[in-house]
Amino acid sequence: MITKKKVTHLSYEIMNAAIEVHNTLGPGLLESVYEKCLKHELISRGNYVTSQVGVPIDYKGIKLDAELRIDLLVDDLVIVEVKATENLHPAYEAQVLTYMRLHKKPQGLVINFFSRKLKESYIPLVNEYFRQLPD
Image (tube, rainbow, N blue to C red):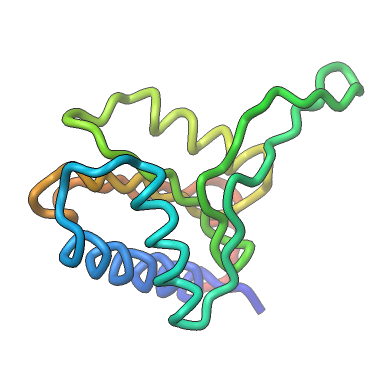
């Protein structure tokens, strides 16, 4: 059974894996490198991870491929958007919230590997799917 506690714990595990990647590589690499390393780290910890997951758009009953991609989907519950940028733009948060809504996922994380301290440069997001889960 999926609970708020389970989803929150999974996000905590994802952040621990991201911190391991960041501690190992440091800032300054491409997003694609961090994405691949984070995927590897999560899989090695026993998580099921898919990358570059398509986000279909249903426009007036027609499914369109808008070439939107989720960086990582962990255990089919948490969407992870990997960034390596000096400033986190509010559009990244809106993007992940939209992906969460379209895929009906309860939690999302925007993780910025550019920063010196990863704990201070990530954004956890929840939505109505999370709020509907049992504790």
